[in-house]
Image (cartoon, rainbow over the protein chains, first blue to last red):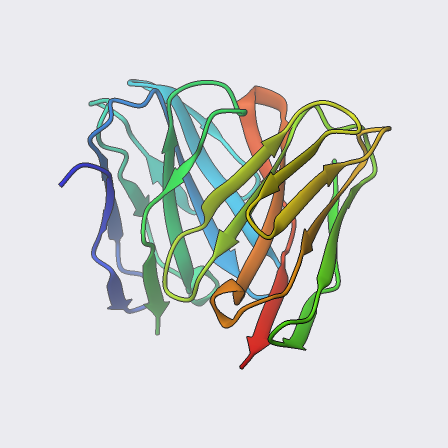
Length: 113
Length: 110
């Protein structure tokens, strides 16, 4: 199906483990984004990418790594998970400027024990 | 850092009532977007406003952009249970990024 997908939808891991969250979009959108959503903080930008092989930090990048070797994929890796990274993670994509529609994936609920 | 403040944070009303939620910024918006998020899903774009004083309507939803482009409101007429959700506003910041407010959690009771 066309659209933006995330996997896994739910993940439980332990402190110190490496975790990778996957994001795939079928529209060939230039921009892709990773957000985390926590009560009391709303949606906060972790990393974003304007095109393949171009990534930049957002508001809360510490402890996360991204890559974008292909336009359609934008994986997010937690190098050594901490309890403070327990959150719901959303991937998003859009074609061009910020006035374009930004499409969000269904989210990944991550719990770090 | 540009801040987006949304109010109220929570709103619980009965079906058929009208309501207004607000989004305010410490600086001028270049553009503003409103999203709705339902439980277990990602946010979905409702509208983008660009011009000061602009009013857009989407069925029972009316979006207004302040003349000074530092505030926006969303008015819902005759709310229905299907309007329940988290309403988020977002503004463009540097690098074509969007900064989101914390949202208004709306519950419409049958």
